[in-house]
Length: 134
Length: 57
Length: 228
Image 1 (cartoon, rainbow over the protein chains, first blue to last red):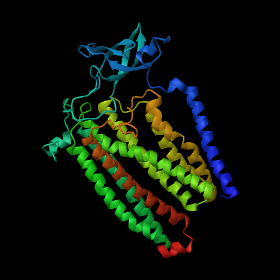
Image 2: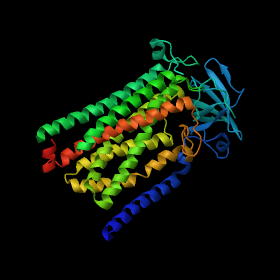
Image 3: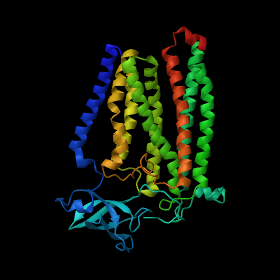
């Protein structure tokens, strides 16, 4: 390989390395700010002011869903911690006991008053006739 | 082996799922957006190439 | 260029048939999903576009490196020609994902890491195009563009890994190299077909785009006069 060509190859690699390190540092600095939601156990570890809008994600605890007209209350859990949620509105179709949700809302005495409930689904796809293994 | 999921065109249009929701509107609108944008891109490039070759001749 | 013209129609018809058959199969023949119902069928349109939009950027980055190291002029044309096609496929990925989110997640837009990094990819494609076109000196534009493409290539692993590194509303990948696919085989075959078919159709678009680029940039050369 010719000398100047080699030099250009090194330049290309340098560009790649610099931008990779740069973004790595930015991402490290932002860290948890890039998370879309927190888990219930993370929420109680830190003090969260009442006026801060938070997103909490986890599983809807089985048997915890109570409906009263348009009001719905349930518990979301990550099997280490859990939190009560109250919501007045329409939940997505995929909202089910035992399935994933992300709740957007405010904390009011250990209860999450939801503004919005989003359903989270996993990466598994299969026809309904096949039973879920594991 | 070759079994259609829908028995009629109307059923395929609505795409009612087991939970009773009609998902056809979402699936069909995505299909249309994809086809239209790909087709428009093809037409744009074909036309541009035609225009420039005409100019070069 | 003559060989490319001949190969073009083969690629086009084979991939068009493959794509349409796979889409038809996916939309009307495969059973519905056990969680998402029929709305999951958008996967056959969304996943190929997302996958190709990222692959095109990798192709652009490779072409940029080739241009910067070996000074191959055609490589620089390729970088500029891929950018608008990449923008179109990313646009399709974003729109189809948005519509898919309505019946499943209950929202059409969230600021989660996967979606934001894909939006950045879209903006990057648009930015690269307008940057290149703002130069009056083509040689300078090519060089600048290639360097920026290389700098931006760091976004691709970020898109890929976003669903693993951070908590996102978007689910992790269903098809990975290391693990058994998380999608049932009857659904996987048409998905695979639609990805390959879409890749072929997009390859045709890249060929057309490159042709336009070559005709524009080389219009004063004698071989172009012979060609047209």
